[in-house]
Amino acid sequence: MTIPVQSRWWIATLVIIAVLVLISALALDKPDTVWSAEKPHCPFCRHEVERYSDRCADCKGEFDWVVCPEEESPICADSLSVLQAEWMAERLAALGPEVAIERVARATGLSAEKAEAYLHSVGRGDCGWCGGTKVDLSSVEPLEDAEPCPACLGTGRCTGCQGDRRARLGDQRAARALAAYQAELADLAKMRVPLGLERVQTEVRGLGERFLESHAGTVEAQFILFWPKVGPAGQVGPTVAAVCRGRLERVIRELVPE
Image 1 (cartoon, rainbow, N blue to C red):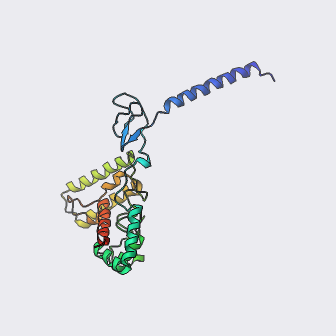
Image 2: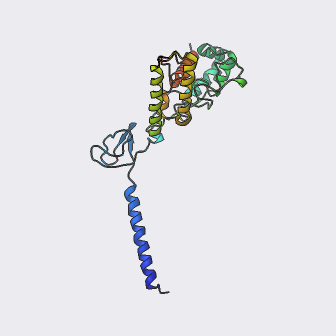
Image 3: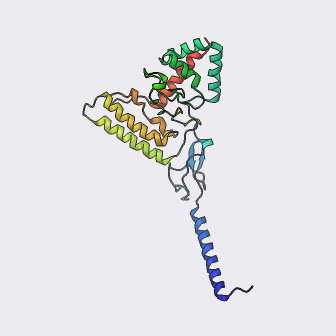
């Protein structure tokens, strides 16, 4: 079958356009940032580059910024690993439920009922404050009526890793959100108005919840304050990461063989 001369011109034009589009696409497809030892490097010269940059200051090569791969991201130390969770289960069996619950209650200040819930629930990647129960164990209400955990917001997962024990590194949106969060805290501390502790905690709680709803699991999440322990304006309290890790450490110390 013979192709008409007019059609040949159209076909040739379409082929040329397709080639040009392909060349443009290849030109736009830049190599990605290379991560090593939790630091970003240029994919061309392998020099370390500025965080969130797209051009190497040494070789001037251009690249696409990407977050650190999960397998190279920092391990989150604010929740239990598999081995630590297994050890706690072994200690529960060795001590017996009554002794183990009594010790956990002593370490956490929780009632026996809630200490038991904590001990039987906590596992790998769980929130260290509620033990994965998802509720506020420090409240006076029964377990079934308790409010969501003030640390993990009721997810039951560690806010620093979202349960997989890897903190997302190099997330530019999270970094910007943290900068905005810290700016709001700084502004709150500068106020000379006697707002009162409850109002300050409510404000800090809202700021933290808005951040964690979008950016839990990032390295930036480790800087969010634990609102129930924030003092009046100007007094910084501990972070969510610190109180979760602290409670886990106290529980572990109580379960260590004497």
